[in-house]
Length: 193
Picture 1: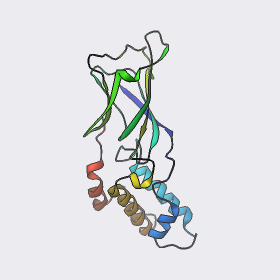
Picture 2 (picture 1 turned 90 degrees about the vertical axis):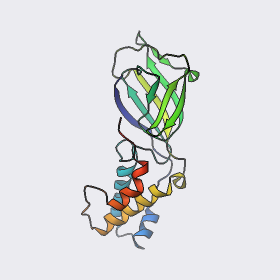
Picture 3 (picture 1 turned 180 degrees about the horizontal axis):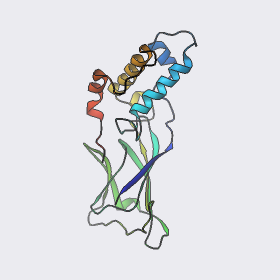
Picture 4 (picture 1 turned 90 degrees about the horizontal axis):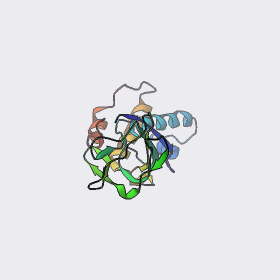
């Protein structure tokens, strides 16, 4: 089994940071910098949220699809993002290249220090799949909750500090995040698998 790709299938229903919040933080009452502030919010989110973010976590609930070229040899199928609250479906192409859906009782959702994963039920085995890059598809909901306040305070504070730091630097954004921000985020950063 080789991990192939992960795609966001549905965006979060709300924003972690609103334009009004960011304007308040940078002490702007007018709308002169709204476009720049919105760009800073988007940049902060791309640094933190999703598959390309440094945390490798979904912050506010969103739907993701992981695609694999087959099931694993062992009993665990790791998911690209954390935390995962629900698995909608596990579909696969069987040996005859026919679409199938794995029964939900065949696996269960688990979490450990490295993230979320599916584990086979005791005594079970993953089905054989057709040889193709998208043989297995897992659709799931990842995120801390439906609202911004569900996201841990350290992550929300780090996002705020990023916006304040970048706004104050007048566009000269460093390649790496400031050490104080990284310290707040360290316990949330997941390893790449």
